[in-house]
Length: 191
Image 1: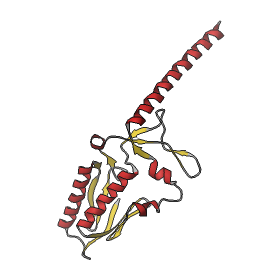
Image 2: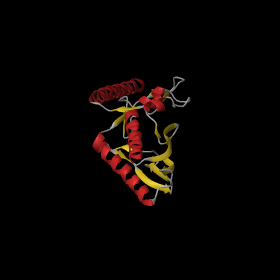
Image 3: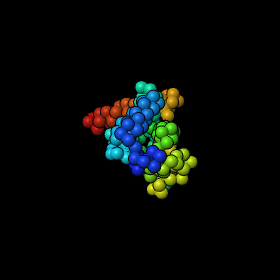
Image 4: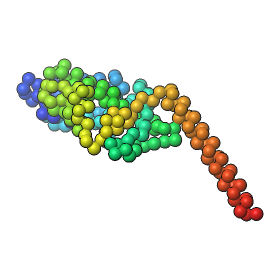
């Protein structure tokens, strides 16, 4: 995610102002349990990224999320699946993404920073105007479904964990049954 064309009161920010904004953002992310790096890209641009993504969830602070299979607008399943019905992940939920973007806008509002921010197809900020969740829901690209964008990563709760354990137990039981059946079938053919 890039914060571009940064201005404070119509002027390019000074190095001290840039350092202050970077520190403000990094401290806010650390406090809220979001792992990312905030670095200066150039004199009027800041980069927020963590490897190949914008940020991830600090599982020690916020716990794990669950990636669940979803379906695109054509009805095809997308996303990873597992026997348990979910995959444990540190990817953020839609609500955590909204919170992350609100942290950015809040910090920039406090510092009175004008800039442009896009995250994928979503506009986070234009000038001094902070975009909200309502704005982002209207920006979901045509190739994706609302369900895929918003409900692909969910908060992992005790019911999901219990259900996953039961599914895994049933799967292992079925695997043992199939092995026994195969062994019995081999004995019958050998005789």
